[in-house]
Image 1 (cartoon, helix red, strand yellow):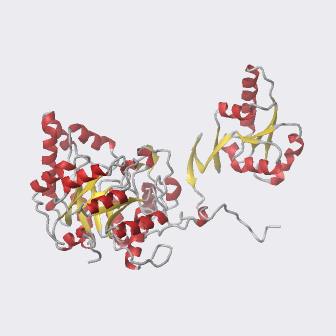
Image 2 (cartoon, each protein chain N blue to C red; image 1 turned 135 degrees about the vertical axis):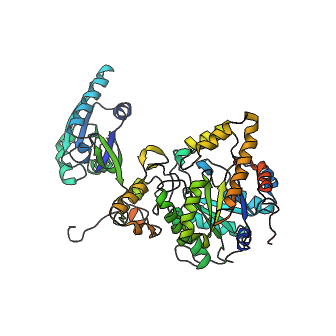
Image 3 (cartoon, each protein chain N blue to C red; image 1 turned 120 degrees about the vertical axis):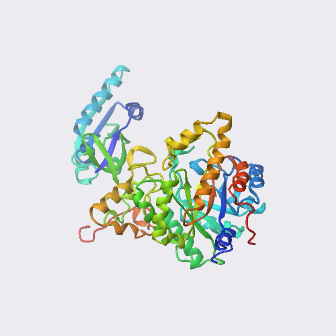
Length: 222
Length: 308
């Protein structure tokens, strides 16, 4: 999923300070799962903002709504009637959702209430970790199912650097050495020999080096 | 001979090679390079010019290398994949070679996290092994990585680094094998304090015949003080300083510790000379270049062979 974290309250307040009536929009997908911008977080942020503005003697009117998927035009249409009468939109979705609202409601300013961070997985309750960089040419089949692009601090494709210590990365004892994980898994699978195959220099075009990416499925596109 | 590199000539002649290190200044002061060059000249075969080492901005290794070349030394251009994409790397290799630099060391580089610009984006377009492949392709095929032909291809003597002390240990010989397969002509190792462990690694290296496919220069760094020994032991990732060495440094008075550090360094070199597969020494006297001549002399590595 795409993970996100709510921006500091002060920053959100600053972005909407000029406005009296706003629409606060959550998303029921990734940001709900990582507890950053779902229905629950929309409710909490709404209360926090109202309280904060009340203290300053200002009555902020907030309409709340959480869409099934904020990155999908079909669902964004639901907001049409709610947008009328508000001066600005505050989105708790990832950057894709924020941009979809900007595209659909061109004459309303849209502000992000979260920082979109990475594509990751849940490690345990309340902990999410980066797993994928979307390089567009997946290596996981030859790296034991562990991604060196997303999980090695130096993006090394051919083995651990000289800073790997007791399974940890040189940048922090909190960070696993991706190549230790890869090596352990290759051994477990009896694929040690695979380590010595050199992974050649990567073509970064599928990973975004060729400009903004787009997928067009001829069989589905209208 | 693959190149005109003096380092290659020394190694090819079967002599124990000696390299050292010159960290470029944190400013535009060529005089500092000149001072270091004068300390080292005549005592080493070639000198590594570090590339933003520890991810701190310094004068570029290319520019400092040109100064060293003009001063009559033979620079080993260090280049890290952290700061440049493949276009910039190849461009600098052409430039360096055009300036008479024919030896280089291909590294991934310390992470920006450790340096003075932790907010910088690391590049890592290539990793160190892919980098070695790129330099070899330029030399052997006369082509850029993109396929285009190079006019007067740079004939670089290609170095890479190895750290026998990092984890997982069982992968360290295989990692060297990959660098050799990619095209590394010589290897400079991480500073060796734990000679037992180094010997174990070299056994694995020799078993696979890797010492016959590339020259291995054993890295040494003299300890200046017990504080430095403790710092290297506890704070530097991938560094292995045995407790006995820390104790030995601690056992001499403060004003004698530098001398003890030099003594340990000389003893280490003497012991490493006995290790099968060691083709020379890389003496990294960090901001202590003035001690290199003494170490070289006391270790019986002076005078340097004349190969030109």
